[in-house]
Image 1: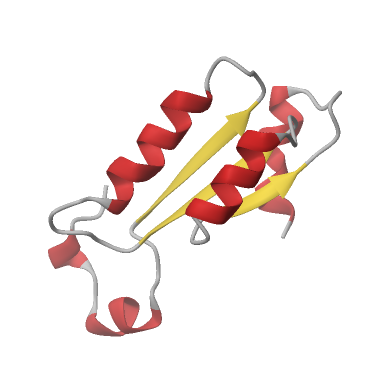
Image 2 (image 1 turned 180 degrees about the vertical axis):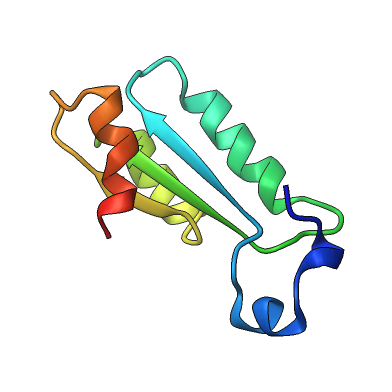
Length: 94
């Protein structure tokens, strides 16, 4: 993993992420854990540039909560029948 000290000043100025967090949201049972993870990332003491990508096949009230409370996360909706391998590839298509 790249440490903050390894980033060039231009990378930091451009907001180049040091790491990415990819979350596949497939279950109604994992929403608390996802919300806790997003909050923990936001609350880092010495934050470094990162991105959060949530591929969501639930599209429910929790999706709306994530969208409202964590606008910095990139939310990608997909069809309910999408498999986990398909969901993992989805952010790479951009």
